Length: 113
Image (cartoon, rainbow, N blue to C red):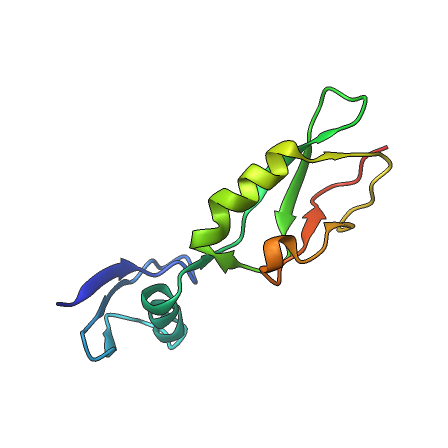
């Protein structure tokens, strides 16, 4: 049974089809093939989120520096919900190294004083 995907690598949004023997069709550019195979075998996403800053009302936007397995998204969110960081924070500063042994760091998406 084949699987249909929409490619997210570029703005074109090709409708990809991956057969049972992992042959990818429907891609306009060659970047769609590794994307489709990754999505079938081990889907990953870059996570963006907000964390609390001690003594401030406005939360700080953060993200993973690399894509993480989709199966880790909710455990990482649970971890980040409990996290309270202290200012000051610089742009792209690593706030949590190798979160949940995912290989990804949580970094600040903007500075905070």
